[in-house]
Image (cartoon, rainbow, N blue to C red):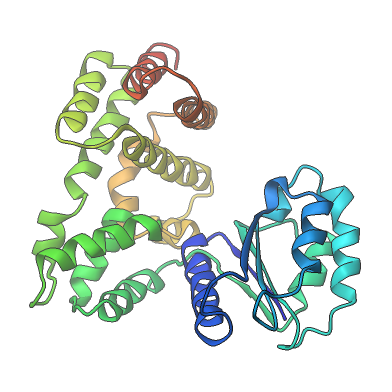
Length: 321
């Protein structure tokens, strides 16, 4: 049986992958010995053949999870052989279960995508937008044993945006503090990252004003309050991603409500961000976004302390814009 899960919302697709894995373990392989996960980005033909060619150990079948095969640099050499293997399968529950999971949307023009997307259990997970996000928050809180008002869900979606990984963490934080009562907008305001978001907004404003003396203390304040550098980088990148989206839409002479719908953002976020739009050119925003990508890579690969790298990013982008 073949599964294919993909899309920009890799939180929900990862949840679906976990559900399939848990169901397989519960119904087929309680030992877990026959569940194999392969790194698709570095997958070789030999590894694929070995994983798919083995019989189950004390089980009639195996579950083989292949993650991110579409970002494999040697996909051109692999795809035809993978397709040939798939063509030999009957896609029934009597065969090994093969689950292809892809973070993001792969190139839909490729033969492998066309093959996988044709299966019964192929599912795309697009990013949630508009009213879908508060609805997801309400359902998730309920599934986790809590309750939240519609206004609180709206407020939380406005504060955090479409990052379900971060939203999930914030929901857990709210539930831990509101075990036996309904989550309200006041709880969201006091217990989530709204204050952090305000400071990130202030930091973005300081970068636009080329005010190094203001930007560096804002960063330092967040670090002193216990925020780690990778989390702050994620928040900064989110703010500039929003700016880049809105700057690209601003030239189309459309209303803020239309911009919010087109960008998949809460109207409150658009209204709050609009004053910054005029302080950047599109080329400046693209340059900063590229710098943020480089910073992310450097923080994960260089021996320098992350704080030093963040400081260097701020100095660079307040002196060379």
